[in-house]
Structure formats: C-alpha cells, structure tokens
Length: 281
Length: 281
Image (cartoon, rainbow over all chains, first blue to last red):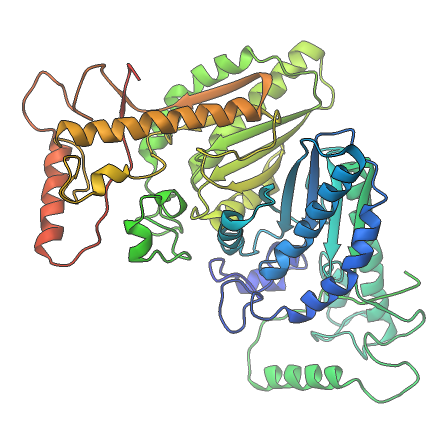
C-alpha cells in the first residue's frame, strides 16, 4: 500500500495510527493507483455537475487570491481533475460577475506523508507546461483529521472518495480476548456488533475532527465539498442489500484472501481502517 | 544528480533547460544530499546571525499569518534549519512587541520537481511529531526563476546556497563550431572568454528573473534573504586567487575526470549550469 520510496516496517503496520503510513500505491506500475483509479475517476465525473453547482453559490470575490485544498488527492490523473474544475468554474464565474480582472489561484494537493508526491509533482510539472489556465500549486503532507492550514485561509476545500479512510484502527478491536477483539481480521463485514460499533465510534470521532479542522481553516462564505460512499440507514452491511442473507461476493473474496494469509504462516497483524458510513451518520 | 524515482534520459540531459531535471541526490544512501551536505550546513550556520538580524527589521505584524518560502530547499537536515530559525525569531519578536497573541506560520519548501519531496515530507512529518513550535508546511515544486506564489503573499523569502545554479545551459555554448562552443566540456574554469561571457549573460538574466518574480510575490515590508557564493570583482577564476597562475586543485580534478569520461567512450553531452558570480554582479 505504501510508496516504494517509503519502506513500511511491521511496527508501522501494527500501530493503530496508520494514517502516517497508509496511502495509494505510488509509481506507474501495473498495481499503481495511477493505473487503477478508473472507479474513483467515474465517481468524480458523476459528481462534477454538483460540484460546479455548489461553486456557483460561493461568496469570495473580496479577495484577489483564491486558495483551494484537495484533501486526499492521491497521485494520478484524477488528482488534477478536481482542482481544474474548481479553477475553471470560479474563473468563469469571476468573468461573468466582474467582467474579468486579475484573480490568482493557489491550489494545495493534500495527502498523507506516504503519498507519492514525487510522482504528483512530476505529473503536475508536465501538465503545467502545456496548460493555459495556470494556477500556483503546492503539496501538503498530513492527515485531514488534523489542521493543515492557517486559520481562515481556504476558500474551497474538496474531499472526493477519501473520507471512508479512518485516522486509525480503533484500539478496542486490537485488544486480544476483549469483547471487541476482531480476531486480527482485516474486515468488519460480518463481524460482531461490538466490533462494528467500535469502528462506528472511530468514524464519528474522525468525521467530527475533520469538520472542526475545516471550520478553523476555511474562509467564511467558502465551499466545502465532500464525496463519500454511503449505505442505506440501518443497514449493517457495508455493501449488500440488507434484505438478503447471502454474503456479498466482495466479502467472500476478502474472507478467502484472509484465510490464505493465515494458512501461509507468519503475517503482520493489521485491520482495515476503512468504513462505509450509513446515511444516518 | 536526480532523485532515484525520476529517471533522467539522455534527451533530458542534453536539453538546455535542465532546471526541470537537476536536483540534489535523493534518498538516504552514501551519496545522498542528506548525507553530504555538511558544507552547506556550515554556510547556513555562519549566516544565521545575519538572517536573524535581517528579520528584526521586518514590518509584518498587520497580518496574523506569516508566509515563508525557502527557495532551493533540497532535502536533508539543513532543509528545516532555515525555516525553524525564521519561525523562532519572528515568534520571539512578536511576543516582545505585542506581548504574545496568536500568530500562525505557513512555510513552503521549494525546489525543482525532481527534488526528493517524498523524503522531505517524511522527515518533516517525523520532526513535527516532536516539535513544540509547529508551523503549517507545504512543498512547492518549480524553478525559482519562475513565479511560484500568488501576488503579495510571501512575507519572508530565503534562498541559501542555491542561486549559483542557473536555469539553463546558455544555448550558445552548445553550438558546435561556433566561437562560443565549450567543446562539450562540463566546466567553464579556464574556458575562453566567449564561453565565460555566455555563462555570465545567462547568470545576469537569471538573477534578474529571480528578483522580478520575488518582487511580485512578496508582501511590502517583508524580508528577502539570499546567501550565495561570490568571488572577488574582476577575478576570472571561479575558485582561486587571481594573482596566482597555478590552476586551482578543483579545476585540475575536474579536467582529469572529464578526460576520463572522454577516454571511456560514448558519453552524454552536458555542461555545468553552475556559476560563482563576481561581487560586481
């Protein structure tokens, strides 16, 4: 899961605070995020009209500089689409409202320190060589569950397909022998209620932290746009239809993969820090 | 010279515009910049009192946020020393003048896109875990001979031991058979006047571009602090004492290395884009 240049030790993986090591696969290989992010690209394309519509409501043009943060940007072709959409939309809006003028944009691509920023900057540099609509850009390495920017400095914050990653494994599920122990499993689908509750509690805390941090960082009148997976309220399954008792095929595959790992002998203990929230959350 | 994750082709090296590929050696190996930057560390330590003294003259405290740019930061332990010094000095000054209050800092570590930002962010993340004096930080990948930030947004810009790197090889010295051709040599020490003049011209243009960009980016009343190598006015040598006719040992070593490269057969054509300016410039 980590960038090739950032070796992750067993100690890192068994820590509850995975947010310093987890990231999309860097580089340009067959299993890289660059070459395996069509699904995310589709989600971003589908939500684009809603993003544009949200931006129309912005009240920002008292400042000649607009600062944009893409939170959980990863590294790939999707990375730049969101910021491009924001810049194009706001530039057009500014021209329509004010008849043009000098508006400058500063965009920040944010992800965990283990993200492949070298690749991101290389792709960005190639892109900016041919782009007519240039903006100033930077990378910010940190967790979006912490503060990333000074107070009141971000006009548009966008987080697409990223908030299902939790900041850490709930400590409870790692306590061997406790009621909340997840038996070292990598998956909460089909886990007992106590485990699901521990993840839900973590998820609630994380979402709360995310919103508190953005509240500090954002300019009044700005736009915070979030795209995240959801499931029907009350559904206990992360994927399937709650009315069917059949296991979702993805769960079956994950359980089989997990069993294979166990059968192969010594392995690192780790748990999933990814939760699809219910709509009621 | 480039980061291991960014392979450089022969085509890249023979281009005049090397500023997109040249950088300090990334990683943590024996030949990495991280482990071979004591000389730069010494220069930075020696200039620290002058930097602190310059910062005392700053007129910035109308803003609750101070933005700092380190231009040509590379990746290593030196990378953070400069920004740490700026933040500590300004925080103390603010406390002395205003008796404390809430001042936030945003620092940008700037270098070419080929710099090892993955390593930089990893080191920064480790450092920030234990630092009491935290600041918000980002990486900016680009040439400091171009604009890197929106207008009037940088309060302190620092460039230490970086401005001797030119933006490109002067095209003239690559024109085979011309009076300014440098015979594919990697070194201008001892080269004919036309070659040295071509480099000087490039150097003048670059310094001019650097200052024009900073003029746009900087806040009025801010501080631009530059440390760069120099040589006595009128001296034609990059290193030695102009009164002695003996070759500087570094030149002799470089010439020998160059001859070895030629003797070993096919090699890439490249030239040095590094110039120690005279004080009169």
